[in-house]
Structure formats: structure tokens, C-alpha cells
Image (cartoon, rainbow, N blue to C red; front, side, top):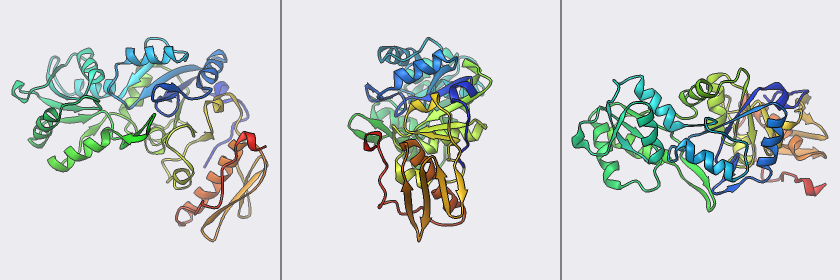
Length: 336
């Protein structure tokens, strides 16, 4: 269940490890208020680091983008699933080993930096296969890589995200192609990105921090990834998670804290409390009755979400299905 904090999260945790897509930006545009919130957290003494399951861009390219969007960022603050995948392979293979590349520039750069040799032809006798999102990936290379995987070569993928947010809406992620190759080859890859531990382990190795807080918008990757390594987490609602996804979150995919946006780093978080069948936070009260979500009261929108999540998860833990939430509408600040 959600935890409370009497202090702002920026005072409790020494580093915020932020997912990018859906948290800091969507497509080429910054999330509203993200730069202001992150600079405020940085000014309060909280270190800011960025992680992404997207392996297509190099860390330097991500730094340039973040800087252009006005975010607090420096070289070394960005860690990608491509770097985590390269680390996994470097720990298994000899220096200079050839690795068949199904991916883009970010994955190629990570392999080279890890002392490995990326190749694009099966005839070059690769010793392993690595896969990540590449927007201009030739189908012929996918076919060649899938054939090598089917033959039994070690196979590491940057992530298995089935979707990612774009300026046009939710698009298919790297996981759709991973699933295709897995079905063809009859086996599953080693996964470097969230929710598997390697990416967050690589982030702490590179960036440091004694009291990390994972900040993300996805339950099945960001929040589950934090849970896998024992980190607390903050879910923001600026990306792919909406009300239907939130109320259906199983154990292991539930955040420690919940807020509409990155302003949640700068405030205290009231802890939900239960009275009979109602869960209350601030001025809001929520319950699940006859399979449907009910909400009563008034207050700030963040507390509405906290009450709703608490009521829904409590019902789930008692064996109920995800509640019907068709009769409730999340409030906005301008509703008040």
C-alpha cells in the first residue's frame, strides 16, 4: 500500500532516478512543469539521474535533448538499457568478442564502450546477439538475428516494453519485436532493462546515491523494476498509466508514493488511512462496493488518486477483480 512522508521526497531521498518517456518528456516535448520541478528538487539538494529502456539513442544524445528542454543534466547523468545490456554481455564474453547487433546507434555505442565488437552480418561469426529498439532497423537484420537466436547463441535484449508514448499516442515498443523473435526461436532472452535489475544496478554503479527513489510512469517496468531491487518508487500520471491500469495494479507493481506529476518530489505525502470500508486521504474517501469504485469528498487531485488506489488495491488483495471505475472521474485543479 502507499506510504506516507512528513517531509518532501527531495529531503528524504538523495537521488531521483527518473524514467524519461512519459515522465520528463513525451516525444519531443517536455512534460508540463517538468523542468521547473526538477530544478527545484536539485536546488533542494536532490541529485537527479535519468534512465531509459529506450536503447536507440546514445547517452550523449539524451543529454543534449534534456539540456535543450531545460532540464538539469550533465554528462554521466543518463544511463540507458543499452549500457546495461552491454554490461551483461561484457561480463559473459571475452574482450573484443563479436556481438550481432539488432538495434540502433545507442546500442552500438554501448557495445563499443564495453569493449565488444558490434557486427551486422551472420557471416562474421558473432558469439552473441543483442537487441534493442532501432527506428530504422532493416528487416533483413532482424531475420538474420532471429536465425542466430534460434541456433542457440546467447541473446540479450535491452527491454521488453510492448508500448511507449509518442506524440501521436501509444506506439509499439521493442517488446513486440522481442516477442516475435522469441516465438520464432522458441526461447526467451536475458533482459537488461526494467523491470529486470541490470539497468538500475548499472545506474547506481555509475551515478551513486545512498537513498535512491525510482520515478516512473509505468507500473510493469518502472515500478516493478524498483520493487525488484528493493527501491522505493514514485508513480507519476503523465505517461501511460491511467485509472484503469492503476486500480488493477498487482502486488509488485504498486508504487510507494503517487502524484500527478514531478511536483510530487517537492511535497510531503499523506498516508492513506482506513475506516471500516472507506480509505481516506485529505478530504477524499474511496471504497469498492458491489464491484464498483465509489469516491466522495473534496480536496486536491493527488489525494483523490491516493484514496482510489488504496481502496482498489485493498479489494484486489481480498480476491476481488479490478473494480469498475466507469462512474468516477478524476478531478483537476481547475475543478476546485
